[in-house]
Image 1: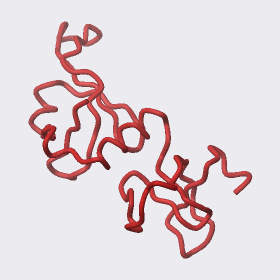
Image 2 (image 1 turned 120 degrees about the horizontal axis):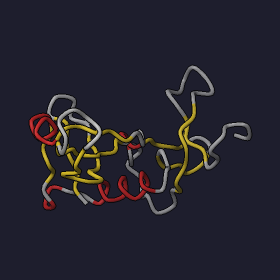
Image 3 (image 1 turned 30 degrees about the vertical axis):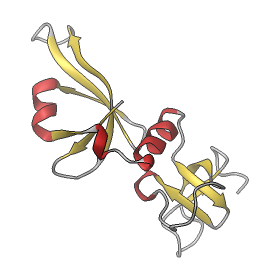
Amino acid sequence: MKIAINLKRKTEYIILMEDVRNSTNAQDGQKMVIYQGMDNHVYVRETEEFYQKFRIKSPDEQTAIDLLKTILMKQGFDGLHYDEFCGCDMDHLNCCGESLGNCKPGYKHPPRNDNEDYFISPRKNNDNR
């Protein structure tokens, strides 16, 4: 697993595939990188351009949180939650500083009130909070 960091925005992405040949454009055989953001969107960029704008995080720079983000993202989750009042998205994993041992994967939803930026729930839809 490779983690890439956007040099301008400092956001992290998971590289899904490198040097994929693109035969659908005018430059037949152009190499592309396919990568996924923490928002679960998948992106495609020409390889040379990708490596001008991103830096690969070396294995010794990767933390347990990086690995957890990767697993959550690959499973389609948006973050972690402990209860209805405690939850963190991918950009703020472990923001409370508590042990992650009791946290569970969850999905991000719009705020329920003016005091929240978002909330994380075990349910994909937010009908039953």
